[in-house]
Amino acid sequence: MLSFIEEDFSLVHRNTLGIQARARYFASARSVEEIREALRFAGDRHLPVAVLGGGSNTVFADDYIDGLVLAVDLEGVHFHGRAVEVAAGENWHELVMETLRRDLYGLENLSLIPGYVGAAPIQNIGAYGAELDRYFVSLDAIDRQSLDLVTMDSADCQFGYRDSIFKHDLKDRMIIVRVRLSLDDTFEANLTYDDLRTEIEATHGSAGTSPTAMDISDAVCRLRRRKLPDPEQIGNVGSFFKNPEVSEARYRRLLRQWPGLPSWPTSRGVKLSAAWMIEHLDLKGRAVGDAQVSSRHALVLVNAGHAQSADVLALAATVQESVKDRFDVELEIEPVIYRRI
Image (tube, rainbow, N blue to C red; front, side):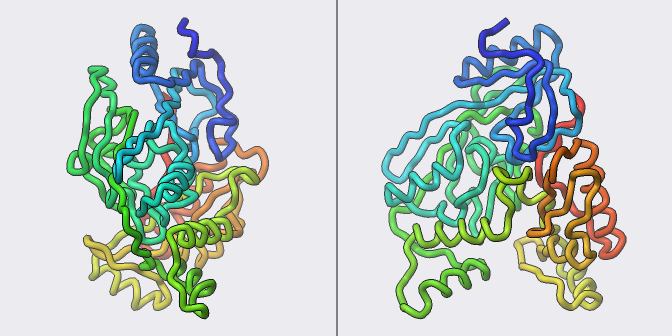
């Protein structure tokens, strides 16, 4: 067996939700060739493969994964002027901090998002008025069928709100190994998000000084720490549900019934606040076993002790059904659910 592949591997420290799950085989791949070797290993034994990044957006639906869990742990960051090429296994927040140290701008609003760089295009990560696709150039990925290395640009990735082709036509097909971004060398504060603007005004408004990129990053970090539970303290994967998008006509009907429903215009209609709907249903603190809707943020499900996979998914289903019954709105789960493979 390959030296970097382990048997009967505990995944409890490879997912920030802290779910106790085990893998029949586990591979920590640190090069493109090791990824290919691991895929050949699985293919020769007719094993299904589940690809894992930092585990910060991952929910194991089963306690035992009877196949190969392949962790993409590639490292390396290379700067070329405003361009940066980053290996998929690099920590996202550490990348953001390094860009700011080099006076490169654009990612500051995306500070403190947990996880690896390789997951960023899959999710088209976004926060506080910014999204990855604004700075994305291209990525390299291994085609799991041919084992070829493929380069994809922004159009190929078909980015949308928390969305990309990797969730649809290329779901479970590509393994991202590196990402290329093009950043700004002049700074312009992005304060389009109300909470961030309020946070900045609280510290800079009276002095009349303009915030720096690091000021923006620090403010984002403060907001995230206030709103979201720290996975180092209590297991969670951040936002468990996406904010749903509806048509303008549908939004107007909802607003007549629910005048306080927060919303944001999008290119395709109106985005609604999933957190507001969950809070309005008094679901904060609702629990199934040790899985619980966070008392700090309604979009977050936490592991309050020894939650099982079934507890988490049952609680998520309860939230979805409650929102559907009251608002007739479908909530989509945001993290990747690893079901039996």
